Picture (cartoon, rainbow over the protein chains, first blue to last red):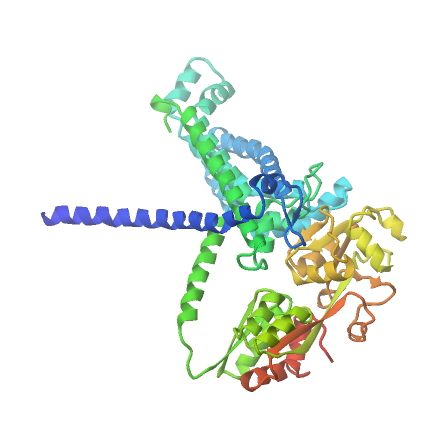
Length: 296
Length: 275
């Protein structure tokens, strides 16, 4: 082998090892998660675990029903998506299509900077500022509730959604836009009928990434969601999403006790939900993928 | 977030098992294990003690009172922290294995119900507290307060503070699922200070001017009422040794009980000192 080829081979092996290392570590984490979580199903059935409405892990006898926690997680994620998708996508359209180049240069980094806000800061803001405000404005018993958590999570997902959507919209080829305008379409018609469909795959990815950030977020929901293990009747009811429960209880749960295993099993459910989100994103991304010039 | 947390857990686990394998020579090693309620006290005192006595290495871990006492009986630890007195069955087991557990009360735990400073309610009975936390009394009006819905705030079920509440107030009944959860005493004070509807409970050391402490059955929760036993929501916390302590264990227990040293740190940790 010549030295050139050997060098090529070494570089290739080096990158292979690096890639394998991250995959192996991730697989180990998944393995660890299932290893510590599955033993709970010797104590309770999968059905009772997922659909049980009482979560009393330390009572005698204990109850391990995470249905209220699942509903809470889905609730805050869906509500925060309803708030963040329109805001994020419309901001992206404005930045990519309407704003002047100078303004875009300033606003886009600022929006991306929002993503750098630590979640504990957002949680603290929700707890100290937003909660008393919601409480007095809507005359509700507590400002620590599903709505507050969704609002804070929306703040966190907007930068993700906006930034990735903007990239998708911005990279729609000029020819498509020019062709549409040349045919006599207005700017708005061009945006809504040509540019948005062409960038749908990118926008979908953006939305799902934003939502998976919201569903896995721990600190914010621990601080502002309230923490009641109830299936909520309204958006102003306090709830306890899965990550909050895991974070609050894990430190004190006796090692390898049923409570410990139940928290890991909750982690499995959370993992599967996030995985599902990513698979859906992948599927939608493929389905709406534009072919030809518009390919992202 | 979750991946990171698990990774940290895994890494710290690996480090811990590696460190555990390194033999410590020429230093005296003291193991303390047991109740997570006593853990902050044991940790603070152990840190201060190691600073003054660098030759002694103290390892403090929390695994629950039962695990601590079991470890003591099996000779796996020098001191067992416990948030309750030893049970008859445990004494019997200890005697069978030739161990004589000796109890030292090291501090008292005193839990006080707190409300918003503007709340006119001053006192609640034990039955009223229980009914509120069971979700039966839902409005302050019933208790002589304003017509406001009560927002019940509780601690996470694995905390020692919750344990006292469950034992003394709830009499083993469950806190209703609609109660809000906060992960620390500080967070409860924060939430109660911002909410006129709120009722929470915290250790005496956490009560400050932003919340109002209620009297229970007419008795104010103070260090005095805790020590004379008249305040109902309190309990002693123990450290158990196997046989009368000697050597490093004795020195540590003495340090712990010293009013100028260990007992000062007890107050700093938010508990009631013995003197």
